[in-house]
Image: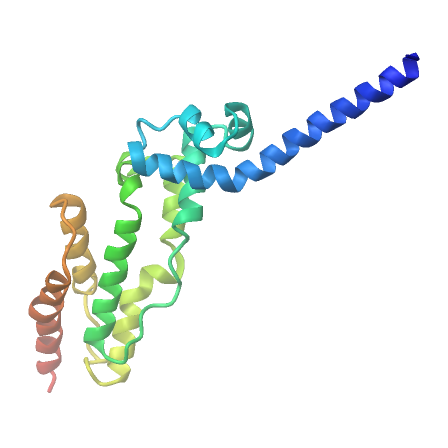
Length: 214
C-alpha cells in the first residue's frame, strides 16, 4: 500500500473518531442533564458522581467533564432543564382569596419539584457561588412582586383599601408561613393548611385594616 493511501485512510479514521466524539458530546448535553436529574433523585447531591451519571447516559466521564467541569455545573444544568424558572405573571383568579391560594400552591408545587436539590439550596444559602448566584437570579424580577401585584388587583376590585398600603411583613406573611413549614418544620403544607393560612390569618388581618377606614 502506498504512503499516500495509508495517510488518507489514517486521516479518514481520525476524522471519523473526531465526528463520533462530537456526536457523543452533543447527545450527552441533553441526555446528561436528564440522567443527572435521575441520579440526583436516586442518591442525592453528596453521593452523585460523574461515573454514575456517565453510566446512566451511556457516555464517558471525559465527555461530561468537557461540558460541565464541576459537579455544581452539572447539577445546575439538570436543575435548569427539569425545573425551568417560574412564570413572571402572578396568579389571577378574579378574587384575592383565590389569587393568594393559587400563589401558595405554586410555591408548594415548586418546592416539591425541587425536593432532590433542597440540600444543594441549603448548602449554598448565603454563599457567593455560581449556584447561589443562579438561584438568586431565578428569584429576581417580577416574581418577587407577586404578592404586591395580587394585592394591587384586589385594591382595584375594592377588596382591600387602596389608601392604606399593607406593611411588608403582612404582604409576605402567607409565603413566609409556607416556607417555614417546608424548610423549618420539614413538612409539606396540605391544601387545608394553605386555606387556614389564607382564611384564618391573612384575610382577617387585611379585612380588619380595611374596616378601620370605613
